[in-house]
Structures are given as C-alpha cells and as structure tokens.
Length: 85
Image 1 (cartoon, rainbow, N blue to C red):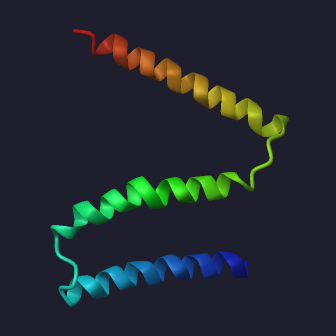
Image 2 (cartoon, helix red, strand yellow):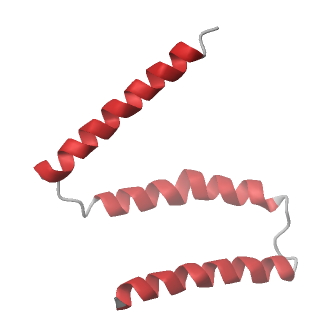
Image 3 (cartoon, rainbow, N blue to C red):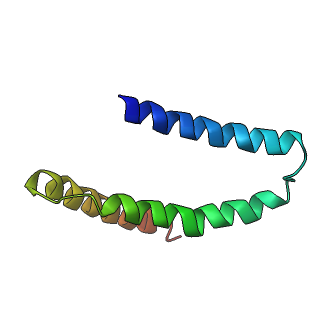
C-alpha cells in the first residue's frame, strides 16, 4: 500500500511542478511540442522497456497477449477494408 501511495504522490508532485512552472512562466505553450516529443520518443519507450524487464511470461499471460495481438490485426484489416474507397 505504501508503494502505491509513494508512486501516486510522485505523479502529483510532477503535475504540481508543471503547474508551478506554468504559473511562473518558465515553460511556454511553444515548449509543449518539444516536451511531448521527449516524452513520447524517450521517456515512454524507456518506461515500457523497464517495466517489461520484470514480466515473467507464463501460459496465463501469453494467451491474452496473443489474442490481443490477433484482434489488433483484425481491427487493422477492418479499418483498411472500410477506408479503401
């Protein structure tokens, strides 16, 4: 329980820091593109790789993983089929 609260407080602190920087006009609206590019291209992949290193695959998780992948392929095909015109 304590670990969850620490993580939640960390997220709240990051949001508060962003709001504080906005109030002090240190970060401008134009900076949003650069910050979002950093988050999407550096931080998010790093977080995914870090969390994936702790995952242990067993049959209970492989089946939903394969089903999710297959359903995404089906939805891609349906989208392609519907947008062909």
